[in-house]
Image (cartoon, rainbow, N blue to C red; front, side, top):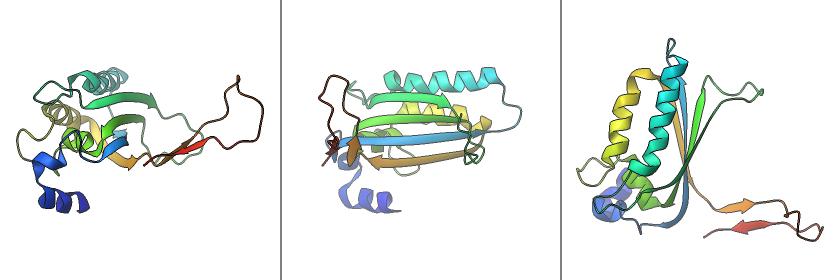
Length: 160
């Protein structure tokens, strides 16, 4: 709802522009498949999703996606809720993410990614559920590198 209100305030061109709210944005996507979806079909889904890193482009040819990672659920915590496959998509701005995600928020042709839209149509018959969660990278933390002096420094960086 908040995204739709913001879209109404600023307009589709601004909302999906590459410079709209620059900074790293992560788009986490989890898939729960219908019974009967084969390992081959799951591999094809992953392959096509990963291709979006190349195929998702603006009308002027500029890339929308910075990177896409994927993997299968392998946690023993028992908290997966049946989700089997996950993806992490990274964008350079909220505008790039908005252009990529498109429908149901952005519905005006020319202001959403046709490659991602086609992928969603391809994917729909295989899904029992999907979960997406987006966030702006506000801070990150990394252990000190092996070459740095051994100290008890906190290596967190805040992002604007």
